[in-house]
Length: 389
Image (tube, rainbow, N blue to C red; front, side, top):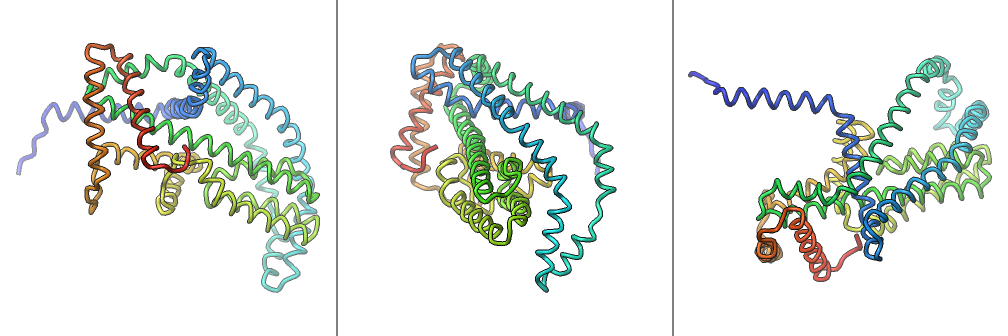
């Protein structure tokens, strides 16, 4: 058997290899672009809300980004000094906190071995090694801040040039597919924007709840513990454990009763967040089964660590949305009547779009496609009422 590779196949293989190598080298730039797109999807509804109230697009963008910047500066000014002071205090109180934990574990027969392990724990070498890495960690932190600032300003420029960028995208897409493309973009904005806004709201509420609870219980360093708990709440399933453990360890200094109160109230809040708060905040942004959520978290964490776990849910929701929008039939799935009605509605919308945009430039045609997609979304929401987006 003779295998021949055509020159065209060889050229394609070389181009694919070169593109893959370039993509790997440009991973930081790609991450900045992805973060900028997520910021755009998050802030677009606020800009449209201001535009609907007779405020120009440029002024709306300036107001939204200005308010976001001022809120970030104010939050950092109010919390960072207290956070650093309380982290230093926690480090100084570590021997006392460890002694309290050892005493608590030593009271019970089942946890005596844990008390011995905690008492004999030596981490001086770890601390010395961490001190040697402070300089490199500081450089990495400066790099992250620089990338974050770049994503922030890139998102602002993308929103300013949004119509032209969207027109270029529609120009590169065949016109019969414009309605579907605009609906995909609309759904992406719903998924990404809803996910980021939901994460911000739930994390802020968790941090505020922990601060109030720990302050009322007299637990020291409430600001630092609440800030850590709010950040840890980003991670589904495991976030509650990362949130509760430091708070419970710190509450041991106030007695067993206070520790039990903190444990019970935090479990109650976690139940309230998962059962009531999350469905209301996220709405239709992430309609994922629990099995898909768990698998996405495992896959994302395995591939890219914490960043992969954070991006896993919107990526999974986007993949399922694309499967639905592109009309891919899953194995064993029968065509439903609702799917036939949606297909017929799409055909009518595409015919109307082609009629209205005949001879129209791509940038103006994109605006018409978005208008039709919004009308479709509103009609389907009225026909099948559900949780708000």
